[in-house]
Amino acid sequence: MKLKAIILAAGAGTRMKSKTPKVLHKVCGQTMLGHVIDVANKTNVEECIAVVGHGSDKVKESLSSDVKTVLQTERLGTGHAVMMAEEHIEDGTILVLSGDGPLITEETLNKMMDYHKKQNFKATVLTTDLENPKGYGRIIRDSKGDLEKIVEEKDANEEQKAITEINSGIYCFDGASLRKALPKLTSDNNQKEYYLTDILYILRNMGSKVGVYKTKYYEEIMAVNSRVQLAEVEAIMRKRIAEKHMANGVTIINPDHTYIENTVEVGADTIIYPGAILSGNTVIGEDSVIGQNSRIENSTIANGVEVQSSTIIESKVDENTKIGPYAYLRPKSNIGKNVKIGDFVEVKNATIGDNSKASHLSYIGDADVGNNVNIGCGVVFVNYNGKDKNRSIVENNAFVGSNANLVAPVTVRENGYIACGSTITDEVPNDSLAIARARQENKIGWVKKKDLIKK
Ligand code: UD1
Ligand code: MG
Image (cartoon, rainbow, N blue to C red; front, side, top):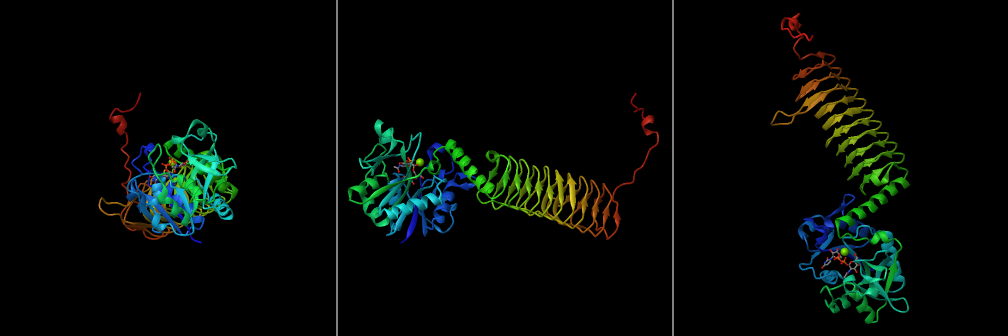
């Protein structure tokens, strides 16, 4: 039997007070809609259909090509949104999800769908008990405890408002039954909207079995309608991700203050200190230390690496290398094994070979640096002439003295040695010393003559 997911994502999200459509706000680095689609895909849906409306161009742009979209030009309610997807509602099971509920898990969806099938229901709604149910639709059960209907907060009387069991906005339907019931929806309610919730009542009155699958994991059904809720959902997702890594053997000193996106991989026995921000397709090996306030984005960090208070973007760092504190690896930096990139060193589009060191205050841009190279304090790879970027090459075992400038394009051959303070514009041959600075001249007694001696 076919399984399809319809994801409601057309709403404006007025309370977000944002230029960005609500479902495109990010939680732990991924859009809420992206999270929901990922979870749907994990339940093995054959097709995801997103109902888009508000900011539809942006929403569509955010989606991968396998997600179908239908347009809801007027926001006339959740039932109306599903009507827009009617052409996709075939026989089989239809899962309806909300684009603003990114915390739902595939485990809960699978359990709900299993229950739905076992009980032979035509519609099943996912519910939970909430201490503070305000704002949600309430689940009204009949004397036998079966679902009678769902009443929205705005349509509820005091007695109904006291009910703590709420509608998650997540359902599964038998496709054929949903198709039959949809045309019967009306907007006869306080919000003048077509409520999807009414479908369950309609089906029940048509003699179909409808049911409730109640979960105790109330956090999973939290929907985001405001920035406060966005932060709450983010905190829960952040905790979830941290717990996954801790279960895999990663030490996270303070999970509440460590920001790891869903996509990141971390090896066992790595220790992550507070304030670390790990994002994108970052992969971190085993036995590494990611120090406080380090930001690592789309980068690969091998085993045994130590990163202290540094920023690493779209780069690679090999085994047992030390980065920072306060180093900045910009895109396409490829740092070898046992390397030291120390404080206030910036590297960009450069390769640094094994066992090399740039311990302090350097800029290494557009360069190929070999193995065992020492780059002294304050060395600048002068890669830009105001028009073009040029590369420099520093071969194995070279020594670049402090405060030298390498004016690219330039090559320092193997074992080349550059005196500190030199501005190098020509190739430095093998095994040779290059000095490119004015000789010192001492003017004896000059200070006295000028009467500059401090009393
Ligand atoms: C809905 C449910 C409520 C439930 C709550 C759970 C209805 C009538 N009410 O209320 O019972 O407790 O979700 O979070 O279904 N959307 C569209 N087109 C529309 C209207 C909404 O695509 O015309 C989308 C929204 O973008 C959102 C989702 O549907 O992703 C839910 O809509 P929202 O307005 O947030 O519904 P609630 O009032 O929260
Ligand atoms: Mg909502």
